[in-house]
Length: 142
Image 1 (tube, rainbow, N blue to C red):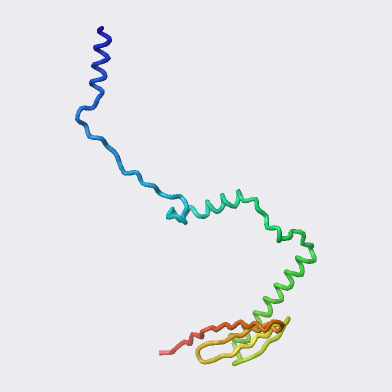
Image 2 (image 1 turned 90 degrees about the vertical axis):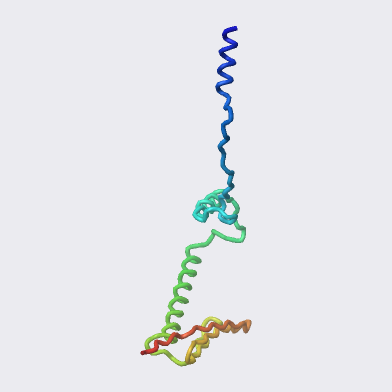
């Protein structure tokens, strides 16, 4: 009987009489930056997604021979050198007012006006035309 009174006393003393409950709002913060999460998570999430991705594009061929790789690299270097020569002709130390350059089935025409350079690239086979207008920023002396 004495044990029952002690147990009842412990239960009554452990119950909070009139004390206030303490809580805070539950706030959901998304992880993915696409949905409002921290933008610094994007590299990590992309790395995890790429690690889990086992899809391989069937159109890509990894059976390239050394000759194919060399031909692609050579073509890239030649086109890079050609584009450098075109840039020098248009914007170099002695820029030309206009000109035409033809190579590999394409014709590049350029014309310099007072405020811009207009470059037109024409595919000779399909007659498809691409026009690029590059503004010239003239240095005005005060």
